Image (cartoon, rainbow, N blue to C red):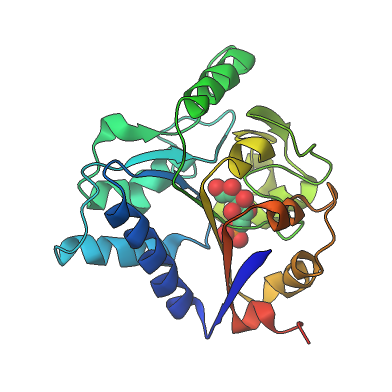
Amino acid sequence: MLKVIVVKDYAELSKKGAEIIANTIKENEKPILGLATGSSPIGTYQELIKMHNEGSLSFKNVSSYNLDEYCGISIEHPQSYYYFMHEQLFNHVDMDEANVHIPSASGQDLEADCKKYNDALHQVEIDLQLLGIGSNGHIGFNEPGTPFDQETFVVKLAEGTRQDNKRFFNSIDEVPTHAMTMGINNIMQAKKILMLISGSGKADTVVRLLSGEITTDFPASILHNHPDCTVIIDEAAYAKIK
Ligand code: F6R
């Protein structure tokens, strides 16, 4: 069962998201977060930075594991997820860089890179995994058709996903064709999952998610089987739910 929280807009979604993450950080001596990139969590990261600046939240003991990273672009590339995480969160809080883990898919041996990241994930238990959702239901970059028992792997991005992400690049040709991502099984191991869904562009996605049908054609549907998954949805994304 998913716990659904409907909020007015993106600002409220970001506040609520940050509140839940801050609670996880405060409740654990050495909190381990699974983090996401994309548009959905940016406001939440800003709220967390605000709490840090006000002195009510420290990231000193936080470790993080990111969901995914593009293949074939360097970490200095402004669209790399390494760059994104530092720009949007890590550079603005007291996070210890040694505790930051982001898939690294720039090596010569992608299979070895995946195994290394997967082995690292098996050493820890993520307290809270933050997720966005692709319009096709992907989580991380687990595109439709990915088996539910999938672990960290290199994925060929769906054409629709490349189109969705084109807005961040100069042209479609610059959008990477592949990414390294935690698998669905890695994601499902987290103690708690928090998904953020915002905007009218995700309204059909929300209908499919909340239909309750569990199918590999819509990867996020597996979250119905997670024991502790909260989904925060703003009114624009919730608009097609009767
Ligand atoms: C990001 C990620 C993706 C995004 C999804 C939604 O690390 O794994 O699954 O969460 O593509 O992206 P936005 O939030 O930009 O709509």
